Length: 399
Image 1 (cartoon, rainbow, N blue to C red):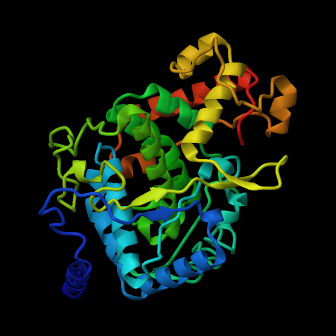
Image 2 (image 1 turned 45 degrees about the vertical axis):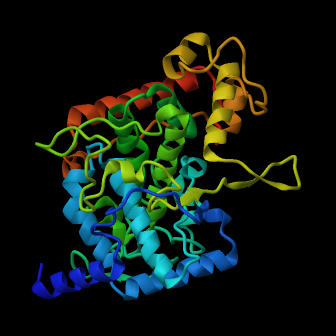
């Protein structure tokens, strides 16, 4: 990197006041909370705020800055238990810088469960929001929020996307699979693997282009995707794992604990564990939904949706599959309130023929992250086993 670029980065760090030495004092409770909404729930004025703020962040070099941070920290924040803490701190850092331009700025999240069958058809990847697949031989993004953008790190290039299914995107992961992970996993080491190699990786691989590189932060899709991943972590924390932290650090480093320092930020892991405290002054709004039998709009949170999945599973699956995939679900006393049970071929037909099998993970992606090939294969095969069991039982997916 040239000296001029280094100097500009140092200047950005000094201006932000967010990246170095933020924890000289103890953690205190937030006095105001930023509400992160599902991106489809943003009001027109909220989307306008996001558009104008993101344009200013680009103008002043912040996308270059955050790509630099993610790139230079890459080996420490993937395949280790720093994965969740770093990305939580990173997204919040971006959000706080944006709030210096407009206090109403917030990073939305993308509820990818709704779009997992064919994400390319999601409205999020339309001109209205983030834009779609790249065009031409270079895969340049030509519509949506970042249409025609030239990115400047690690070199000058157009923002790119290259869907891994050509014009389509291979299927992602379901809320049912994620619910099973949340039920079964009791350690950060296991939970991190089961989410990082599947739900997390599928979006990066599926969108391709910049999203499949070490500088994936060039794409605004990175921000809304990782806000979703953070939402999943928050939901798991709320199931009795609020301060659960264990598992491997980077190569040659000790296991991660609450006292460990987050790569680059040099702040304790403990400092990001609880939303509403310290610098984590944000929370997740439940997505607004409209049901086919209701003329009113109602709110339904991610954790509530996963709870509804468990209720359906208790009514639908044989006991041995509940014990295998959802050990915490009571098989003899189904939870009340489940209204979307669909058995057998008829139910599967209404929901696209059951769950599609998870995509293959390219070995190039595995090696770029320094993942253990055997462990990635094991996690993906376990996910495929889950899908096969659900389909053979005639379970109709939520989406």
